[in-house]
Length: 205
Image (tube, rainbow, N blue to C red; front, side):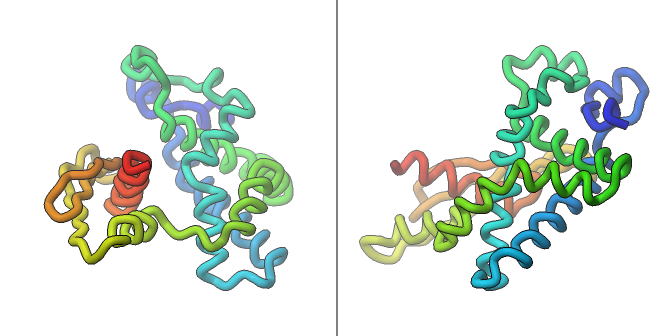
């Protein structure tokens, strides 16, 4: 089960074995449940919206990637030839493997075991985010930044979508008053828009 959790679709396709996609799906739900339960039980002062923001920060792709680095997940991933040939392993690919391993741990050892692993690895992010719960999402922050000196028109445009239905990737561009600012990529249009806003903010800084 652990090997399956660390098997990327590129390797699975080349070697006619199962990939970690189904485990990733389950792991994502478990991660969301455990973090939601922890926030509900330990942060009574936070509203529903604030808990949602804290959870989003604690279990985002960057946080999962940090967990993977901490435990050297990339050393154990089964990757296809195309992925091996790239100069660096994609951040999303590594982050997805964490969710798959979480699912494998749950199926093998139960909720108590996986809950400990998850909380041991995300409590710092939760503590940080709960103290900075005024954080707004990237799209809101970008809007406020661009409108400091008056009203502007901000648009997010879908540039392309590619991949099979179960693993689509979206590319979105953001522009201000017709001027292109940045491009973002994500597994949904919403995530791609958020990534574009984040990249635009980084460029503005």
